[in-house]
Image (cartoon, rainbow, N blue to C red; front, side):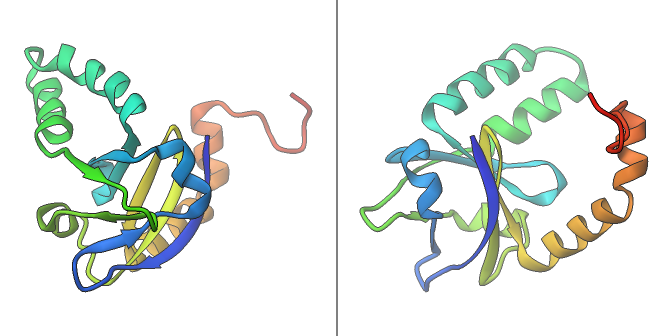
Length: 147
């Protein structure tokens, strides 16, 4: 499981180091794709195969399902992780996420997300401000009560 957030900088060749804590579980080849909220999703190859199957079965469904299948599948790119833990991010994916020089790399359970630094700060500030309302909306118990 991927947890935590890290700020890393791209080098002049569009490579970025993956956090050392993530490297073993991600493996030597990762899949990078467009994500929701204008971030990038990074999956291990094994996790991607499971994820891709979900979208592949939707590729002929409703317009919304077809659109998401295209977003995630057509936008994906295989990337080798070099011996120092760097991965090359294609320009079209960096552009999609508005990433220039620095990116926040966040562990989100079975995937890693890559965010433009300012967008991450804005997004997390909003979530933090509204966390109680979100918890209530999705039916999480009050943090003061025992589960």
